[in-house]
Image 1 (cartoon, rainbow, N blue to C red):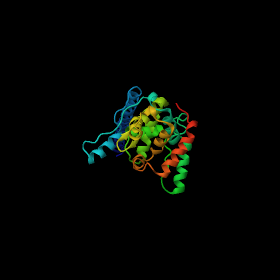
Image 2 (image 1 turned 90 degrees about the vertical axis):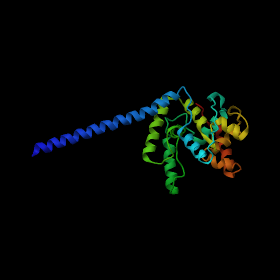
Image 3 (image 1 turned 45 degrees about the vertical axis):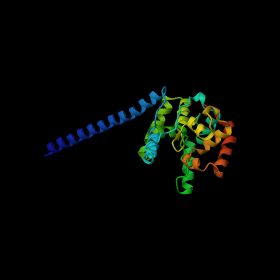
Image 4 (image 1 turned 135 degrees about the horizontal axis):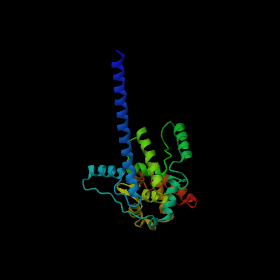
Length: 239
């Protein structure tokens, strides 16, 4: 009687170990797919990102001929004023951290707790880049975990300058408007290199809600926030 039970338990254990091994290998291959893309983008510019593709699909649901406005600008051809403004607005410790601003995350959690709802995220530029490049807008523990892994890969394989360069070229700045070059031309009829401090501060202030602020550029809050960013820009550290 004991032998059949022992054989059954042994078979179940083997099946469990086999399944676990298959899942582990699949997970490694899945993460390797992300790593391979990031490694390639160290020296090549990404095309449409996951986020851009989702936006394009939404636009084409209304207009089948819709296209995104985006033109790549190299790091050297993006105004230093915009780089400073975006760092001030999105990630003041960008040049110092390893992809995660733990102090910022803690402050965001405390603020959300006080308000009883999510009003602050604490995401770094590296985390936002990870999300925009690969992930959906779904909010789940799995997605946040995957975002953290991709963020780690970005920081391991790319230097800060390349991370910021890609972020500035894929950030959303309006309905179908992506990247600094398209934003500069859309709002100010100039190039990304030609943006002055005031224009840069306003573009950086729009980043949390670009679709809303495109329609409400006279917003009093937007103006005040732009002025705050402008005042802090000299302290920003560029990579």
